[in-house]
Amino acid sequence: KNVEEALEQVHSIMSLGHQLWAYAYMRMLYHKSPDLYYTVLLAEPVKLLPVVYTPTVGEACQKFGLMPQYRRGCYVSLSDRGHVREVLEEYARAELPTDAAGRPLCDCIVFSDGGRILGLGDLAAWGMGIPIGKLDLYTVCAGVNPYRTIPLIIDAGCFGTEGNTDHLIVRDHPLYTGMRANRQIHTSAAGTQVNTAYYGKG
Image (tube, rainbow, N blue to C red):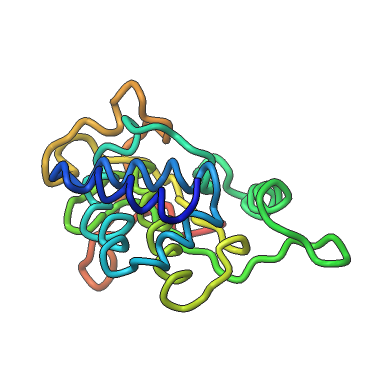
């Protein structure tokens, strides 16, 4: 498949009137050939960045667990506390290029805990679309090397249906792969609600 064929296909899918299908197509294209994926994005960034990032990524995150899962992104769970470095090193060994000394090369990590996705509320581990989409934006607009990046989700639990705008079943969905535990929150000295997991001893 070449750039012209890929563009023709994604244009055809976009003509169906629902960008989520185009989002799924682009995720599949990345899985098959990251080089082709970014060449296609760079060919028509004005048309395609809204497909792979905002506004389409919001709905994609709401349905992330229902879509085909492709290998991209690192998940760090609260159960990894004390071992975060090891989790990142394992991911880096598997996914990143290395220098002459064998050390992984990473220029940028974009992370989220999925707690406030574009006004949609708590989508937790299904929020992986956000760091993926931001890194695509950085690659297309700033020339960041996509092979030297890590999209990362901090899995700090997930509220129930009351925690997201559309009252979707996320945490208790049979296809949800994150922690099936409620977020632990408290009120900070400033009067804001904060995630308790990010405070106190490491």
